[in-house]
Length: 114
Length: 112
Image 1 (tube, rainbow over the protein chains, first blue to last red):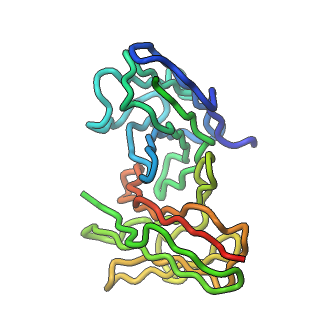
Image 2 (cartoon, each protein chain N blue to C red):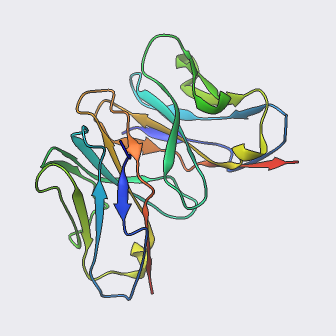
């Protein structure tokens, strides 16, 4: 197994543009999580899926953010009308479907909004 | 809601010296506890975890951590630090909901 992968690794965009990130979890994992990490902070939970169902969204996830996991495998995170405050590392993790949910993280996508 | 505090933002130790990184959590019951390490520009790698049972847990790279319920702590230790251990370390808790709450991390610098 190759672990959790994320694409792209880096994204530079101009304010107001839309961006989409992809996460491919470990194949046998049915839970998938998105976190956001800014400089000097720990990761902050954004949302998570069990199979294709989105079970929880953080209040950090404004209506400009949307996440999908259409077939219960890979997931996408889209940010519309990006703002400079969206600049961060976006981390994806996956885990099995039973507690304890030991999460395996991908390398992250670093977003810079200019 | 649960929270995690890592009181030390930055720690510097000499290579070969021992290390202890502190982590305190706030939660009404015993959560699942994790320590992760993050190298610059990279994702997080799980070092060790506590779910139940023996309160002293062993992890990868020679790290260990001790869960102390009375102090709501889960401190990370290593008896002899190597230069390659320089990184950022995060403590996290999960209250059986599946989403983790992280501390703000401790940056470890290793002096030669």
